[in-house]
Length: 231
Image (cartoon, rainbow, N blue to C red; front, side):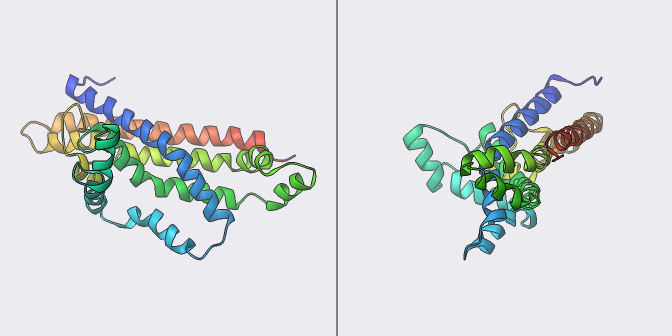
């Protein structure tokens, strides 16, 4: 398919790893936040919504700098994790996954929130009147009917993670084999003489992976909608 060098394949492998882990780890809190925003009214709702969507409008470098201040080796959270659990996030691939998750979370939450809001609450009420508890109603009514949005949110988050650059390079730098994801590798190749060829190959590959993810998600959404659509 592509005659990639070992360094290029390593950047692709790391990007897939970071994208998958960031998406998986952000799914539970993402759905929880989407459900809270869609179903509850509380005084600080606008503030919470603003904080969630803030990475969409902030310069990615600012987001990365904030992560560095919080999760760096001298940051309050970073020091706590290192001293108590021996976990270092800054300048590691786990830090790249964290940065990607933060940048992809707003897209995930928005897609899930719209999907949950589209679920007719009368279906949930009907399940309750038939004797189903909250958990059973959630897993048999709310979650299945909002599943297309969950899939869309996960894919959007993965696509954002796969292409994340600004926050990642600010938080975890550019370390080949550790934090040099595909977009950072493209940037590095463009800064070196004769690097246009590898940069073009990686750019084409990133487009292919993103398109496959989007088309695959739409196919899954159609199948899910067909199965859960009320008859």
